[in-house]
Image (cartoon, rainbow, N blue to C red; front, side, top):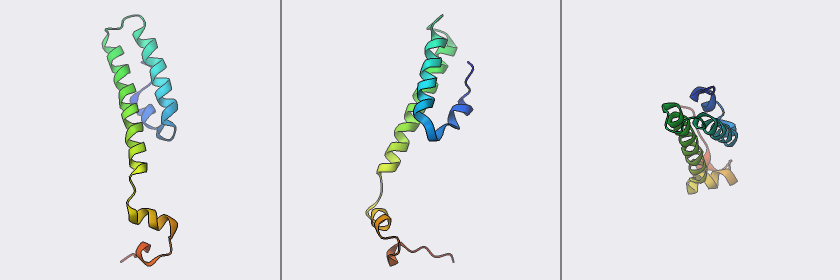
Length: 84
């Protein structure tokens, strides 16, 4: 395989493109022999990238009420952060 997992992990900001590239590579890798170990690894990389994308989306949507309040009112007393 030409794409390493490390190079795909660094594409965190553009995970959608990394998934598309991984799918293309997995199809290419599996074309001659769909039962090879390289084929299984290629599709595992696709699954890992898709799971990472889902985790990132879930993390974005899980804000507490306080976080939402502080986003709207950053100068409120409840939102101040002190260095001690």
